[in-house]
Image 1 (cartoon, helix red, strand yellow):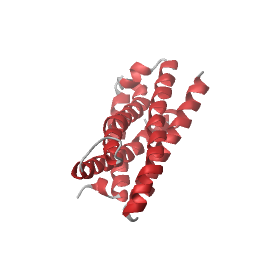
Image 2 (cartoon, rainbow over the protein chains, first blue to last red):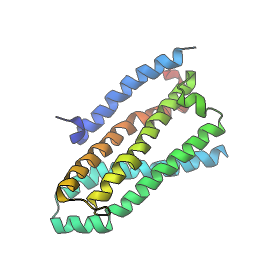
Image 3 (cartoon, chains in turn brown, red):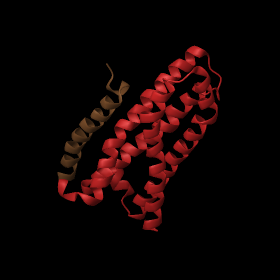
Image 4 (tube, rainbow over the protein chains, first blue to last red):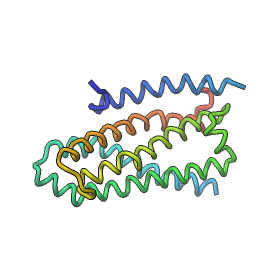
Amino acid sequence: MNPLDSIPGTITAGFVLTVVLYVFVKMLVSIV
Amino acid sequence: METVLAWGHFLAGITWIGILYYFNFIQVPYLGKITPEAKAEAFTHLVPNALWWFRWGALATWIFGAGLLMNQGRFGSAFALQGPDAVIGMGAWLGTIMLLNVWGIIWPNQKKVLGIKEATADEKKQCARVALLASRTNTMLSIPMLFFMASSGHASGLF
């Protein structure tokens, strides 16, 4: 079942991706 | 200059993302419910116009955004995800991927679905599926993209 086949699935995937990318970017910003 | 570039970026961005959300939340469910005749009318008079504003809005958004970063002297550091510029840089990368998705996948496939480019019935079905998934991908990517764009100016404490 592809989450992109439903609107709630798409939106949820977007929020999950936001959290994952936030952690990644926070790590990048902390590199001096 | 900064204001003009930001203003243009907002105007074009609202056009682009507004139509993206219209496609995904409104048009796709609608087209799934109507008669084949109504669908043919929509494909002739509604969808091409929506796609025109959508794809040119996307390009304008990227050009104004790139101009804004260049004007601020951080185009390179943003796309290199360097230090604090990684925040807006992530937004810029996501926006760039979304733009390439529009012009590289969504629009070429939609041209076949709409009959602007020749395609068999089976090809049209396949193209419709690819265009839908690409459009849903952009909807998904728009959520973190807007988060990083908003955070870069308003939530530096988060990073």
